[in-house]
Image 1 (cartoon, rainbow, N blue to C red):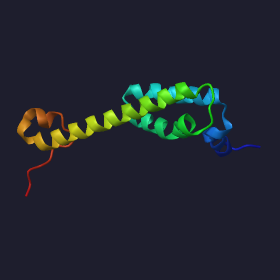
Image 2 (image 1 turned 90 degrees about the horizontal axis):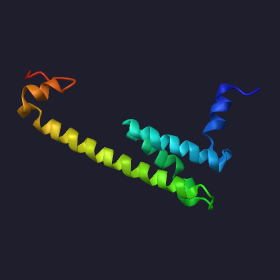
Image 3 (image 1 turned 90 degrees about the vertical axis):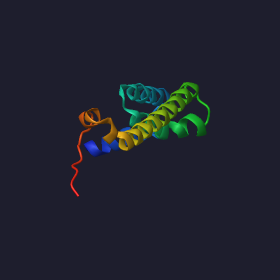
Image 4 (image 1 turned 120 degrees about the vertical axis):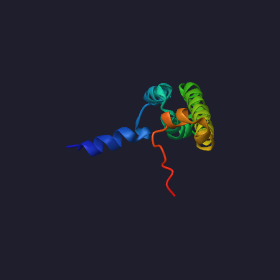
Length: 112
């Protein structure tokens, strides 16, 4: 009898999944990234890279390549935008006055 852990391990092994199912999963991860979840795009790019670019040709591979590349680009763009925003905020928070404090989750105290 298979345990839940066995079922989970089987479902995470993409080598046992058909190419059509791989494409469906890849597409779901790609679409999930649009819900402001760029880490899902990163997972999609890493998880399916081998099947999209390094494996033997199969009919769904062209569409999978598209999803993987778009996921990778989306993740990189989000990461760059996040780094820019964090840098700007950290540098300018104090000079923004009340607005800088209002959009802050933690307001640092001026204790020395």
